[in-house]
Image (tube, rainbow, N blue to C red):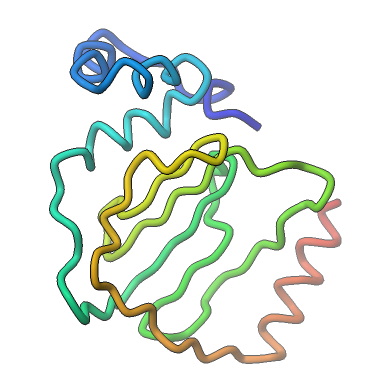
Length: 138
């Protein structure tokens, strides 16, 4: 699913996107949600050295639901990727800020800086339940 299926750019979005480098702005019609997120994060500073996030979300292919969520070092949600679909976008949100955005294999934003990704605790029974829930939706 492309974000153009559920996100329409408005005039304000288009004015802000026009401020981006042309090769990035050119992706807006195909990946509107991702490019609006690029606009939001464009001037953000990278995370500092040894920054340990409390909350990490990873989205792929403009899903409305995160593919992976980590809260206080605990995996709280995981949606396995469909191996039959190539992932064209990846967005990483760290403590509410877009820290990394990749589109069609090209890194557009990388503000990860000196971040230290947390060691994650996984409850095996909850992980199995999440996997079973996803397989029942197929």
